[in-house]
Length: 130
Length: 139
Image 1 (tube, one colour):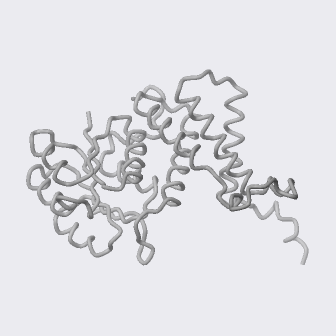
Image 2 (image 1 turned 60 degrees about the horizontal axis):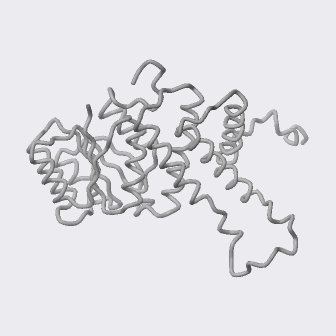
Image 3 (image 1 turned 60 degrees about the vertical axis):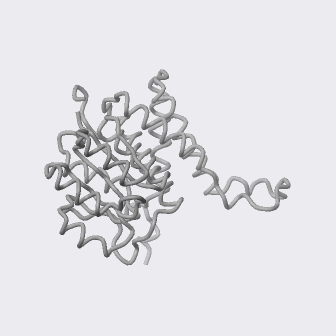
């Protein structure tokens, strides 16, 4: 089972990500409003397969969380979202697997799933497959 | 590193319109996937229901509202293109809520969903073909 974690302090964006990713993967998605709460769970043995975090979140920002997640579990896929172009280079340097510039749409989200979790991405899965 | 989303200088925080359009696109994908018999699991049903409820609540033609709540002098103006579009989007949301709740969907209901979906998509993107535009044949 894939664990997907979303961290964004904007409720509407967080809810959009939840609905799109739960639909795309047919799996439950965990959400957090701040980086520290997410890190507390991720570092306590609950490693995720995919983390999508906004760069501008309280307590621990997305770039710090990215650095910590990659040092804990390099195999974990990490997507950084941001409305600030200047975060792209830093995200790349810290090993982010994808950078999603806001505003994004659902096709961008599904493209992330297709590329980072190909076994899970099945919004168009044929009958007979889960 | 994969890079997706807005290109500069269009990058900014997501506003209510961005959220609505993203959710509408998601609803269209959900509808098309259902019509193609893609499997629905527990979380997909939940996602469809939540998304449809949001769209249904937000699908309001704000241009028709205003400080004047009296009955319009010209009732015919109420059925503007925008009004019809938002009603079709609302209908799309209502139908998908029924799908998510497991209500029976026979041939006619599926056809109604497909037809309504087609009209919504046609309003969102222009799929005109040259052969349909007879006026172009006249110099």
